[in-house]
Image: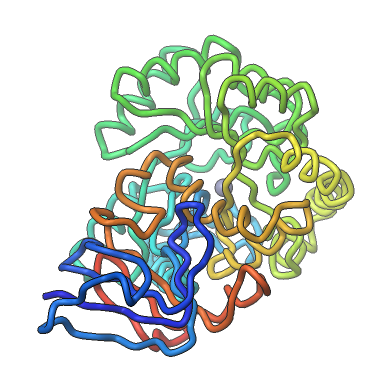
Length: 394
Ligand SMILES: [Zn+2]
């Protein structure tokens, strides 16, 4: 079954400018053509979907999020330790919110109870509505590390064992915590390096052996350099990276995955942990220091993408924030499409509207290249060629 989606604007995410009167031709789950309506030959028996003056673009990619956490409810690590049925129910709503906001692929940065494996499976069976998931199963963190929920791994052998177990259960990449973080009550400060060089190296070796990679939570401090030197490429958050860190990241081709909604949006940590003075002090410091560093990241030439870090539905906010740090609107859209696909190593399947790619397409009301908040007005969502319209709020 061939479908032709027409609209007033088409931005294919390849780096080309947006064009007027575009069409995306979809056969089953794949794109067969995308371009000017006058230049694409549409089969006579194709179903035509006319989106009027809307703006067609690739489905959004959330390069860093979680399924079951809601930061505004506070104590994020505690949420990961709640009964499995409670987490599952929260997850169903969160996944729906993600898809509704135009996110067609989400990279999930750790869950407990192998819930990301189950959700990925059920979404593929269409029993649960949500984006396509790219998963890492459990976080690998140490006993005194940020993000420690139900398990912790110390020493080279335990890190190796955790990596192999995660891969066995279906991890598509590995997630390591190599510095402290904002939303934890333990872990020795945001910049504390939490794994040794040898432990980091063990994880990278295991990922290499399995043909995949390690992504590391790293806010700042010595952990960033340690991780990048040992071969870690996506550095998650990176909001306190120094100029020296950025020079090394650029030289080694490391990515920065920026996650600012959780830090700056009023429904993020500010709401969830307002009664915890220790976390509030860390939040205050991070908010004061991050903007200058984020501007440095955008100006540095280090490649970047974006993630909501569980602020489900707020990827448009995340993209708009990039403009505050000096990104152009084109670069901001690329960070949530083509660049995000490259960052999560799925660029052969998603990220642009090109023949052969999976048919992940959204339409928005307005031109986000001229007015970035148009991205909040998602109208049509197509994932794997399947159309989702009027998804209700949950
Ligand atoms: Zn996270």
